[in-house]
Structure formats: structure tokens, C-alpha cells
Length: 292
Length: 299
Image (cartoon, rainbow over all chains, first blue to last red; front, side, top):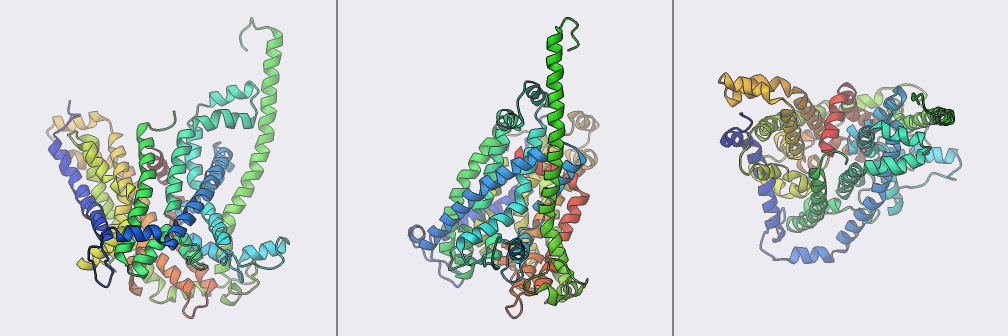
């Protein structure tokens, strides 16, 4: 039996990757922690200031608003993505040509850039040249083209629509795999026993795919908590900073205002939040693969 | 139902149930078909409209209120985007260079790491695996500040290698994970025979495993390419020189416009061109992409 080989050799094969992670992840992270206790800026500084950055962060109204805005965005978009994703999975789970084509096309925007798709929708939503306004006026839903990017709520909805278009295929493809892994005999038997479509979804498919649903929800929610591109491109954080997300505010503080120390403290707070949710995700996905 | 002793009433009831199920199925098929067509239209409309806008004349593309369809086909927007600032070919080359370096780095690191993880047992392996997954737990957005300071010191700011390193940080955990699974999927017997013949572990890797993990390597390359080509925030922060921009950053600067006015036609031409490689790669290598996606996300 050579299933177990000499360890030292195995370690040698892992060494380059370990070294890379050490240099470009672990060391920078330690540096991030260090910087967060200083008043470093791109222009200099770097004296130890203790917990000042953190106390300032918790009192910073823009950061609070950005966190709250990010949370609200996440809480609204996650159920939309998961609900629509599951509905689309139910629709396209059968391996027939039309369903397969639909599945392929719904997943297509997942591979294109969030930047590209945000710019595409930025154009579609534009007041002057946007086809969404033109269409809404044509079908008499609007009397005249409206400005989507001057009210925080409308910005959020414009972003939600565009991001939903871009990533709804993510949940769908995971749910299709989960649904297809369920033995068809179970649903067939339920059909013969007189269970209607809703009953079959509610009492069979949902319970049997709940692990996938939970994981997809967490992955998707973590992604939304880190939202940046879509707001940077569609609203630029405006109007009056009302659509800054957490990452956007960190970017703004670190790379526009050059407050590296403060930016580092904000980054650490966000990391702690993300870490909490990532830990749940890793725990869940390690416990057992697939659905139970 | 094939049971001869079953009573006729039961058989009739079963037949009835099957008939009802078949009827329900047929109705459902039509409904599903109609919804599929509607979904296809909704998903494709933004791409189609963007493409149509990109072949309008620049004047028509910036017209308010807009027209849905171009009245004539014009490639002027595409010519403009090829000439934009340093030129589209420069930006596309930058993006390709970054993605290329990131792919090489990811493979060079993940293939041996996956081999080590899948085929060797030693104390502390699990801990080391967790360390390698660390980039999954720490959002890379948070690491950009220290990495920026580090890169500025060693002259990696504004360099394609620097950006490629960051894209490798992003892709490495998934790549290692995928390669580990690829190696684990290979039967032990293959390796045993070679070791009996006296092959070293490196010879085993190169001669026996190499060809067998090519699908895994293709998947790693595919994901690294797509994610690197699309990555926005790090490119925005690290690439300050106009000639070093990648495609997504070029697009944002098209939107900002030279004089503050957006050139809508050129912008849509840029969007279409930035989307094209991803769509092509996805259509050609869909199987690798979707299976890798399912592998990475759920397991």
C-alpha cells in the first residue's frame, strides 16, 4: 500500500502555494491589522494611535449609513435572487432542448463582468437615452422619462434589477443540480398519490434541497455584502453619499482620501462581519457534501 | 398493476391516476414552454439592445428619446472605441496579459498543491489546507490597502504582474480545491504500478497524473481567465497609468467621457467587446465551466 506516502515530499509540493498565501495574504493581513492602529496615509504618517480609528469608525455616520445601506441591499436582493433562482431551476430542470437552452441563457450573464453589465444597465436606465424609460413611457406606465439615479431607493432598485439579471443564473444552476440529484421515483410516487405541483415543490423538492439553498443563500449574501462595482458605476455613491456601500466607503477613505489607517480599521470591521458568515458557510459545506 | 390478483377496481383507479398525471403533464408542458420563451426574451433583451445600440450611428445612439432599432448599420462606434485614448488593442492586450500571467501562476501553484493534498498524508495537512483556503475567508477587498503599500515599495504598482498576483490570490483557493478533487478522482492502482516500477513522485505526477488532470487544469484556466478579465476593483486601484488600464477600467473612462458628455454609442460598443470573450469561452467550454462551478460552490 502506497496510499500513504512520505509526508515531507507532499509538503514540498504544497510549499509554493503555501509560500504564496503567506506572502500575499497572511503578511498583508497582519499589516492590515498593524495599519489599523496607526494614522498612516498615502502621504506619510503612521504613528500609533491605539483604538482611535475604531472608535471613530463606530461614530462615523457615513460608515454607519454605508453599512446599513449594504445590509438593506443584501436583505432585499438575497431572497429575490434565491426565489427567482429556485423558480427558474424548477422551470429548467428537465433535460429537454427548450429547457436546456433557457438554462444556458439564464446562466450566460454570470460569466460576463459586473462592470460591463452595470454599464449596460446604466445606459438602459438613463433618463435621456435609456430604453427602459422609453419603454415605460410607451406602455403608459410613466408620463415622462424619470431619473433613476437621484433617489437612493431608486438607485437600489435599478441596481437590484441589473444584478438580478446578471447573477440569477448562479442560484439557478446550483438548484438545478440539486433538483436533478433527487430520485425521480419520489416525485413520481407523489404524483400518483395525487400531490399537485405546489405540494410536490413544498413537501419534496424544498426539504430535499435545503442544504444547497442554505449554502447558495450564504454565498450570495456574502457577495452582496461586498458590493462595489455596481454602485460605483451606476450611482457613484450618490446622491449625496446615500448609496455608498461598505466596500465603497473603504475604497473612498483609503484610496481617494488616502486615510490608510482609517481605511484599514474599516476593512477589519468588514472582515469580521464577512468572516462570521464565511465560517458558517465553510462549516456547512464541510459537514457533508450534497444534500441529505 | 401487473399483479393478476389485483382487483379490477384498483386497476381502474390506478389507470385513472395515470391518466390524470399524463394530462397534468401535458398542460404543464405548454405552460413551461411559454414561460421559457418569455425568460429567454427577458434575458437576451439587454444584450440585444446593447448590440443594436452599438451599430447605430453615434448621433442616433445619443438621441433622446432613444429609438429601439438602428435606422442604418454603422460601425463608427467600434472604430471610435478602437481609437479611444491608448486604443482598445492596448487595453485588450493588458487584460490578456494579466489573465495569462494569473492563469500560469494559478496552475503552477495549484497543480502541485492539489497533488500534495490528494496523494500524501502527513501531520498537519488539514491545517495547511485551511491556511491555503484563507483567502476565501478574508475578503480581498480588505487586503488591497496593505497589498497596495507592499507593491508600491517593490515597484509592482501599475504593473501587470502585480495585478495578476492579486487575481491569483482571488482564484487560488478555488483552483487548489479543484485540483485536489481532480487528483483524488484518479484510481490508486494507476499510481501503485508506477511506484512499483520505481518512478519518483514527480515522474508519477508528470507521466501518469499529468494527462489525467488536464480537464481540471482547463477548468482552472477558464475560471481564472473569466474572473481576471472581469475584475474591477483591484484594477481600478492599482492601474493608474492610462496605458496600463485593463478593459473594465477603459470602459469606465469611456463613460466619464473626454468632455463630461457620455458617448453612448461608443460605450455600448465597448460593453459588447468586453462581453464577447466571456461569451465565446462560455459557449465553447460550457461543460467545463458549469461542472467546475458546481464543484466549487456546493462541495
